[in-house]
Picture 1 (cartoon, rainbow, N blue to C red):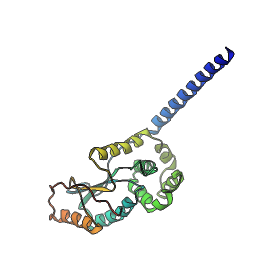
Picture 2 (cartoon, rainbow, N blue to C red):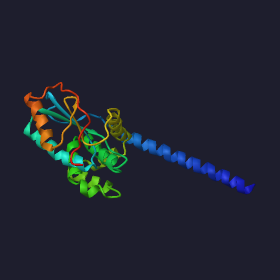
Picture 3 (tube, rainbow, N blue to C red):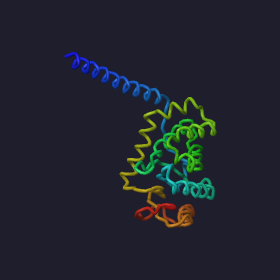
Picture 4 (cartoon, rainbow, N blue to C red):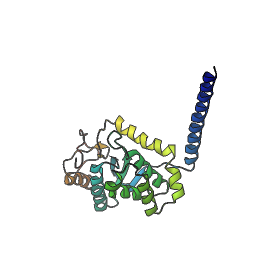
Length: 224
């Protein structure tokens, strides 16, 4: 009888502790959401008629290679291309991709999404194999001059986690399976080389590639 009573009390305490932990976690996440305003991650000319969208994964080596090519294309056609980055973390093969995306989102709240984007890709070989890459993300945040208290708080924000997974769901609904995947003027791109990719963007800028292009299937990935 005493033994049974003990286990009932123990079970009640465990339930209360678990419930309290969940409530505290929810409260902390809610506090971390304060002041967050979500917006698209756009680079280049926001009003350009040529629209390039990338679904990407910060832990993907092919995406790292593609980031350099995208930067070159935007520089070549300065003011003529609107580029938008969207998250598509391949969670089954890249265990840190979501956390990296959240770090970029947290930097974005302070207006430095692409600064963190560049840091993550430039240093991918360093943080990607780490069992716990958070320390690297914190270091990159310091290097790009973020308010560290805000950055650490926003890393816990459920709104940013949900935003990353919302883009993941969006990519899946489009039938995407690999990264990087690009859309040019609303149509999925297909290419075999970097030069082919750059040529298609160039043709869109010059008008050689119609804005309402014929849909193509399925994407060919950079590098791998």
